[in-house]
Image (cartoon, rainbow over all chains, first blue to last red):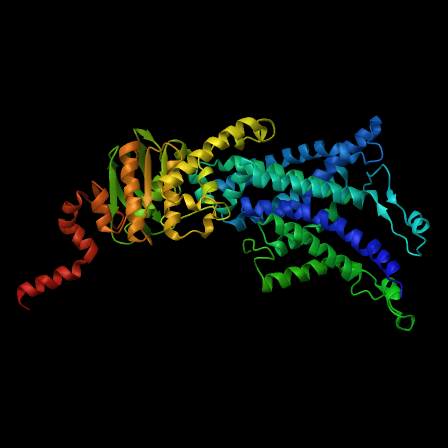
Length: 336
Length: 263
């Protein structure tokens, strides 16, 4: 029995990846939840909004790299991020002007807006592939690791290594900063309060003189920011491939719904619930079990509940369970 | 002040407002009565811009305001409250009031980051005003309570308070008295009279409580089946044949006739 090594293995393969993935999902789900709370529809184009923002950031990163601009040990993409957000915000505002605003004017039912967002999704989907192509793109640079497995082994003398990628650390730090800024904005500023008021009771907000178009505009700006940041962090951590971002839609929606649609705190909690479930269910526990259990009990198989190919099934299953037993989510959002 | 001309609002085949015309005099407290389903609330909704009219015209001080969105009307000084009190449930009563005047400096993204002092000054002024309003409505003790948790009657007071945060010209009150006890209703009535006298608000009040109407309203307009039936003092309205018929139905009258005929 070797708890220390078991814990290190667990951290290396489960805790750290799940925390990083959870932060990315949480940022994505925050965008979905804000749109749902304020514009009152499920934005299916969110995954592709992330892809578009990331693509813009990738292109600007490449340009910076070719100019010889770098950010020291940090990825150049972080420098390009504000510009990527600006490009994504422009596209999203344009979409709102051209498409969603019309449906708001005619007071269309939410399902019509959902269908419109589906159309927007396909267009953005094509746009991204048209500009950057459907292939995997690498844009991460700077230091790869903060601690490598080898260094860790040498440092501690343990037989298990612990690797901490710099992108994982950047993800967590960025997510904390962004979430803190968002909550400060929503709770402390007048604009944030208008957004909350509009989300809480639209009729009353209008009759209090709150300008709905401004609230909607600010919401889209924030959503473009969140989507681009989530997308870039995911891309840095793994790689950028448009199709992967489309696939991310499911875990992101699952996170938002599990936490309670329209509730920002819920979106964050939901992101981590989904990420941890996904990683834990698809992780092969053989190694950890080998350290904890007496030698005679050590398993022969991989002790893996599900192949990683099925990881989306996990978010889908959790989504179903939550919808069946607690449709408003863990944090009492609006019911779907 | 407000002039409604031949207003129609149809929901499919149902004519909720069916050619209503009326005029609200500036400085008056007009009562709007009528049996359930007479189209009073729909009329309010159309005037306040919540629903677009099917046809007809609404003018305010000679200016055409038909179909303007609620927040635009708000800035023209036209306010309304709801039959079932609405509130921002997750905010305190004071914050609810402080939401009110739209277009605050803090609503500009630019100022959020670079105009902190202006926002702070504005917030301070708003806070003082909100406290004043809460004091006036005798609910100061609820300032820091979540608005979702106070009683129905107190929410009604809060709705009235919302109209006091700005210099309203005309306020539409939809059943201020519904579900409110007598004492609180008197408080609301006094507040309305005082606002009318001191600040010159024009009020239009939908209400089913005739004592309340009699106490504060003159003139009274009676609606039925989407049309305006009669207008006058409450006594005149009460004596009006058509109004009695609308409220009690024709059955009763026929019965009287039958009785006269000695059948």
